[in-house]
Length: 79
Image (tube, rainbow, N blue to C red):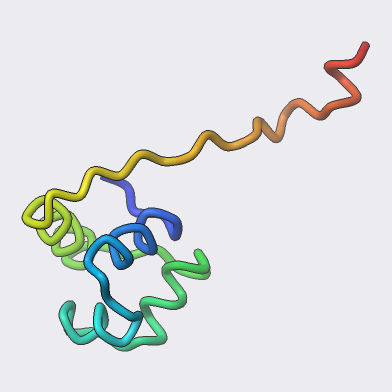
């Protein structure tokens, strides 16, 4: 699974954790969790694997929300 900010936040909320609580569980800093959620950075390597393991064990199934297609704006569809 690719972890985006929305998915990380959804997992954290599913677990009932604050950013600090999730950071403590993952052995990282609260600032790192915040940066991932705001998509300033994405988790890599071991962090991706650890997030996936935590999600699987928690029975977390992330369904990303549909995003608007940035290649089409409303002016194009009105024509």
